[in-house]
Image (tube, rainbow, N blue to C red; front, side, top):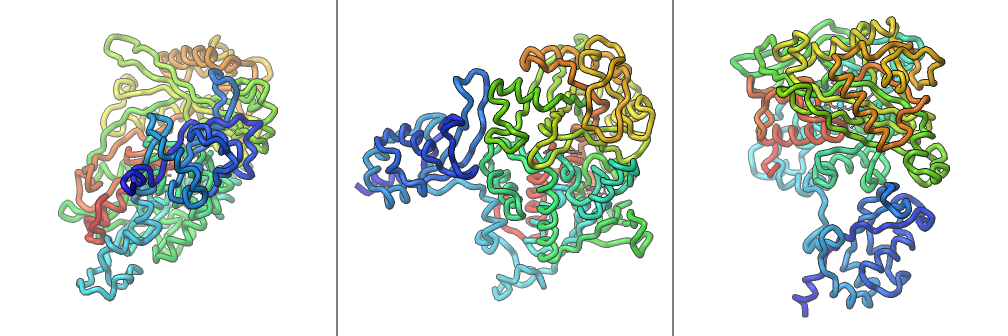
Length: 618
Ligand code: FAD
């Protein structure tokens, strides 16, 4: 009957469909291959896989699983089956569909509609946006200009910072018709690329255009990993991913279990993003730094800006705005000071510090894939360049100290170690890669959690104690390297034995030079011991992790924000002043490209709602 049929109509998700690598002959990453249809047929208990029409199936997720517990390495798929389409194309499958039952983790029924993020439709289809948008004067949202409701004045919004959070906040606000000015102290990607080139080749650091500052924010010259801990399948994450695809990212990021872009893909993507914002009417001001907020009667009414490039036709200017979105990242320490000068509340936040370890990529491939390592072929092979993720819990030093964790962070397979200082007297590093991840090195931070107790042990108190704590180790690292961005290093074996590496050092991807040093002299002893203990444990899990070819680099301090700027969880507005919207990593609400983008996007919706540009749900 109709009701019986309805019970099975809609979409079914089929999980954990394993296809061994020698059977996985899809033409491209998203292909529904014959081998995959065979796995689908097994789940449906359908006798002839070749009768299943590939058009009725969509790959939702594809990951490579080489865990030692598996009989053989394989690709693992999640697939969505459109029952209507399937029946139109192949009615003989009905008997099998009508036998299907949901099974936790293996088969799930999505009766009504395809599950994609609600916000996706808001940003992309303009269907929902037309219903929820409130008309504004002269706005591009003229789709409703013929409606009877009175036109509101177009609100003026400053978004400070063009990292992922600032870009997505600008996008949402501009889509809703706000008059957005995006202010960025750094340079557009074309010029920023030349400045970064001058840094890595000639050691010339531009304090306002570098690995942290400039179009795209800290995530541009990065590894471009798009993995996030905030719920891979949530509507908001999908919405960010779809936006990135719209601006030129490959569609595979929607499906890949470990999506990755790489710097070479991020740069054109950001150019497209910029063009789109400009088409929406966003005024983008590069080389322009916000030095101060203008606050009147407890409300932000504008910003003071200055020319950070030294090339623009103004020294400083006051600009009036209805609201300011602060998306400055966590390397803009001057901004934290400025906020304190307005008595805006800042709270110190726990984070993690450590060292960056680098191994030959071939070694990591071998550890992870054994004989299959040959299949990697510098990123051109079928299976991905190997990565790792390790974590170890270390008990506290005394009864008052909570356990610490030491974990690998921002692992960059086939990447390189780069300098992320914005000031030559402070040395800090991170990792980046290109899309093919073809370099001969694999690097990752090994970071140990630190808290206020650690900050006060070194005499740092108050809201910026964590910033002072970071700075202390960045200055020590700069001194140990001898200046000029030379990085202090120690082989892992020597670090375990607490001795300076005397023999020839293994090669490093770091371009500005390394110098042998005893990295035990960098951190307080409990952090060093936590690292030693954890490295031993990681070597158990990944035999060969402690090897002659592995080199530790100092220092990794900017793993996440050392500060949080309290805000109302629903409106995203600062708890201290009206009209200020602290977002992204620098405000302490994100850690990584995708989570920063999601935070900026939600803040954009919340502000649009406050400004009566949007009346829908968030
Ligand atoms: P940011 O990206 O830091 O952007 C802030 C922007 O604000 C900057 O462009 C800055 O110039 C601007 N700004 C600051 N102060 C002012 C001011 N006063 N006036 C005007 N403009 C200002 N994350 C991942 O998820 N995956 C990765 O692979 C990855 N790799 C990384 C590699 C490197 C080398 C680095 C440094 C970071 C990496 N990260 C990675 C972290 C990621 O880049 C950040 O989490 C993310 O960029 C934070 O986004 P955001 O918008 O909050 O801030």
